[in-house]
Length: 432
Image (tube, rainbow, N blue to C red; front, side, top):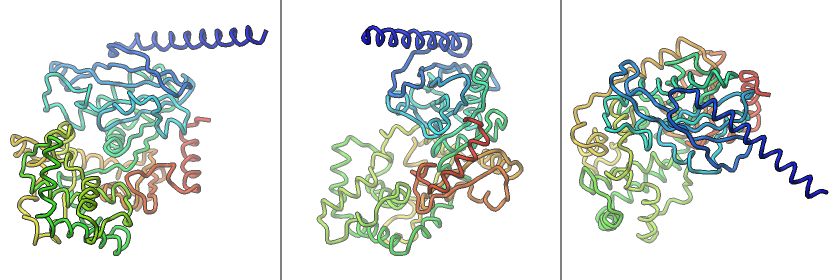
């Protein structure tokens, strides 16, 4: 009897799931821009997941420029639930292919999820690839088109969120289309004013304690003062990995040494793990490579889409060369990004700071419901929007995790702060 009852329950569940799937698929068929979809298998069984191909205009203001297909993931929780838009700033393989993927805000709100891969990354790259249409503004129209297509079906509250460049995208999206979502939650999001922004260098000279900063600086000196010992190891490593560069490997070595400081604070590394001069050369070198993989500066880094956007209108950071002038040729480092990260034809590209000014003006003049999350010693916080804390905004809330890094999230904050954020989300999103 129990066996038959269990079989009936399982059959009922299967029929209910299939009915639910049919409803979702019928919805997707009604959206003209959805050119195809397939169901995804995830560990999370509370949502039904689909991979969508969404047709987008290359140039939102000129349909004659053509179209491309953008990769989107829909996680359906229920039409009566809020929806979270994840504005990924790069490729989305980690979300599409990882069966255990779950984003923090979606979990908190028990919401539907719409995850969007950024244009020109991985499977969302137009063919042929015309870089003219890779701009921040054009990208914002991508999100607007997707949200506009789904809102008739998912008509409860919407929130947008993203991490790092994805967090910057969340900010841009709110500025360009302020009424598309009800709440925005950008994590560790920079807002760069130039290709080499200029604020990170002084920020890093004040991070944590002098003892910690000295430990990092001493390790950089160790690498530069003993470059003749480590350079053959560096060349061999790059050769074995098949890395090639736009500049000599000696310059790449210097850049990795400079990058070490930024990387250390970005990922919240431990000072106690930094090797000292008495350590074995192999220990020093292996730690160096783990901390600053030279593949980052290689032609094979897979970052061409990001690099193009960085030089055009997204921006980046520079390095403080002053303490190392005795060991590094400053001219090799100044303006390094175009020479190192991109082919020569991009050398004359002039950075357009329109988006920086547009978003800064928007945040200054408006007070949208936004929660910003930053890490105290994350270098990207230097180019963040923490200056808004002095503007007496009622709806803009900025939280900085003490001693935090680029890994700062709502869940890494103190219990008191977490409760404050959750209460605010509950008030704004009405998700309970």
